[in-house]
Image 1 (cartoon, helix red, strand yellow):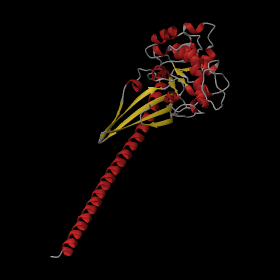
Image 2 (cartoon, rainbow, N blue to C red):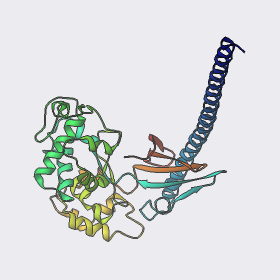
Image 3 (cartoon, rainbow, N blue to C red):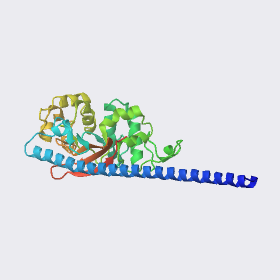
Length: 330
């Protein structure tokens, strides 16, 4: 065999090996793409199933709230914290998985969006004053409370006028990672973590008393849902006329079935003092929840999905879904 023939055979072998390697690479790529496609299809199917289950949970939650309110209107148990709606988990039977709903009265909080109502300086009157009384009632100094009221007001309002101790776009734009204020109602209390001076420790201390309702009105407190440790909320709506210790005593001695009417609650001795505007206070308290939150969870093939639902629940038959948030709130 000549040298030329050997060289040709060597070249042919190299070409064959290159072709084999190329084909192997193509086959592996196709297999990987097919595997990824199958996984993606499976993931999409599971996600779709979880969304259907979340939708089912929403229907069940609305029905459960309606039934509880209707029963209370017929003379059944009041919707206190001890009511089965709030004290028990509602399990949902699903095939190939599980589901459950936990309800909470969302009417025991200060509505942060009331600070964006305009007209009142932060911490001076109205919602601002209520917020300051709440914050001092849970341990903040008056100066820190006034400052935080300004920060939240500046975040929510649409103007560029900075409140005392507050922060407008100029402050946030100068940060290493710049951003702007919301300039409108907030959707979640967790937005406070982006606001000036709100550390993790501060947020953990005050967030249990706060909510972000879809209104600029002050929250109407359900006195049958308040705990003694929530007494600062009563101090806030009375703009300091009812001190936290007195409020805690009232809540500690609440009747077993709860107060049956606002009038019964306002007939208690502390409210007979001339310092109390009982007419104004009667518009800010209730004995039934105005809002109910439902945290629904579903599982399919060990994959979980949570959905947080907020319902307006002024009375039975009139329960409306206000917001729906997929995933856990930060």
